[in-house]
Length: 231
Length: 257
Image (tube, rainbow over all chains, first blue to last red; front, side, top):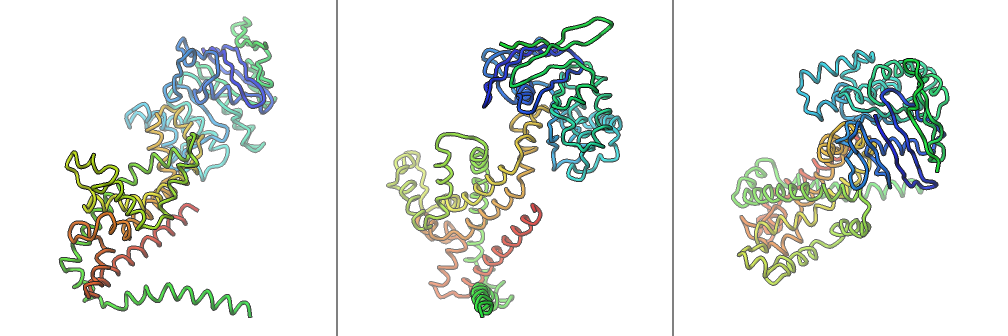
């Protein structure tokens, strides 16, 4: 569970979000330039909010004087252009988070292999990112984000860098993969097709302000997972 | 007509560079070259140059890398001044640099009393040779490293952080490998500049055989003493190293492109 109550001054407006993200996927939707990426970066610890709190499973990540740096947050981030490590092969990219945690080699290699197989890119283990297609890069980025069992997952416009044909297949694969996670997953998109396909709670952000409450049916009950304020 | 003039001008200048260098090689047959290199004076100069340039290169890397990274990544007041300061030693005449260093590290220099208090002599020692090389060479590395760090996408460093690598490990595993061609090219240039250092060295370190007499100083002294053979043998070593540096830099450029 991620609790966010933050304020961050951007160039043209102030981003204000007050929301709670339960385990499972929440789609963060809104036009480009609305502040969606800033929200993700703040949760990841890559940007410091001007005011407010970010709490992950009861641990205060931001709030008051405290700011837990990104590398101690255990929150995975799939970047819009993937940000793969060009000097490392696919296996080393996917194993990077495990290496950061000192997971010993045999176990790391086994985990990497299982993730590559799961996403259908096992044949690319020794390839460099520069030689991959857009869809393949997307899968490597996803495997790299999930292989070390993060406590939350953030995806910034994961399909915007793909061509239309690739987007359909990749979107379905990403949806299926994310559906199996029991940690909060925030998927940022400006594409209404993503909103429809994921059929998940939606937090809308426009000009910096979280707008619509999100609902999700779970065991027949309706939950208000994400709540907004518009001061 | 213009074509011929342009061609002639270009050929003339190329010959002007190539012929003297070729003459160096032609001057000394391989047998006499090796014999001249085996003399105690030549070996001592080779040893001093190898030792001092290794030290100045190490200092350049250890001190220059953080500075280059800060200049590439951090906005701070006075950054433009720091940037310009780094370029200054490239333009300042080496003899002036040597005099300036003497005013700091000499017996009556700014740090003179301090160094004297701990019985440390810097001027006219091997240490002074290293300082002179550091002063004139480091800018070449810092400039190249700064440009190299600028080519590394910050998002990739962010990705490393979100995956759990702290700033130092991210720097070592991501930033440095990605900037490596630029770092290596800059290091080689800085080292070569230090190896050829003459003016600043002779001002602040003097020309003491076995202590401060590097290859360029030995070339100069060889000619003064009438030992042309020694001078040209050591000159050949320096030219060959320069040739290797130019080829190496080209290879790096091609790999980066």
